[in-house]
Length: 233
Image 1 (cartoon, rainbow, N blue to C red):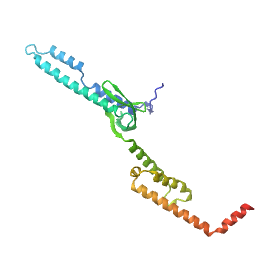
Image 2: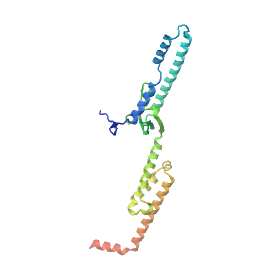
Image 3: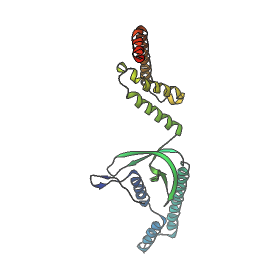
Image 4: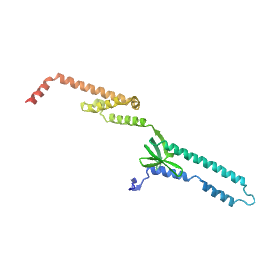
């Protein structure tokens, strides 16, 4: 499988996933593990003052303190794994910071979870992110309602000014009215009041235009007869 990386100005740019993993790895490597602690303890014993040696009790106390910290770290890692596993299938936002300092939000569904080097990682669209970068968890219904309201508002804003519409805009306005009427009360709550007010103005204006056209046709039956006569000829 070919590897693809974004390039800007001739330089390879880190993806949000790569940045998240790199920061997570850097964080995990900055701590002291058991092996490093034992090496430090041996060095302390080797270079201690022979006239005032450290007592065995103090060494045991230091090791006990480290063991307690290690147990807490293991417990924290286990909780991270449980928390990450519970996110499978959930819609989440991942907050990452690029090498240039720019903050980016990545949104998507967690496909699966991996546990590497005592760290939990979330996979979204086959991209790997540290659970430390988890920003928020989004309910699927909430996200769907938000997107529906956003798309509805975009379509409404594409219409001409309400005073500048004509019958050719009728189909789009009718579709928006149908879409709005199909929304649940929960979905409608995501629409701004100004958006709903604007929709009603378009509906009323379109109604006026159609009524005016109908009256114009009723007042000019001769034009209709002439048209029909021309067609028969």
